[in-house]
Image (cartoon, rainbow, N blue to C red; front, top):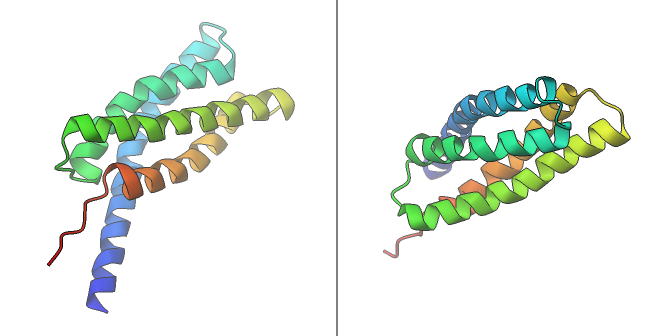
Length: 138
């Protein structure tokens, strides 16, 4: 029972940390996104892709250090992280494109929805694959 509580506590701590770290990276992403749409007139699904990609570097660094407290070598972790992020980039841009161009939603509303869905993908992928620690044999 105590082992289960420890696992749940660790999962909750990681998810809360992931949201905090992700919040910082998301602010960076949104600043780029809004600037590109409003100031440069770039289509939302392209602008969000650029913002997402650039924020991924910050997101990796903060998650490596704080959320997952990883001891993995960067060579291993960064390849996995960017694989998960690449799929997230595709999902994010696709959701924004469909929401803005097919459904006619405001680009910010579309992005908020995309952020929520992609956050779940990113957390699960990074927890279960990128930063997963190998179980030690006893």
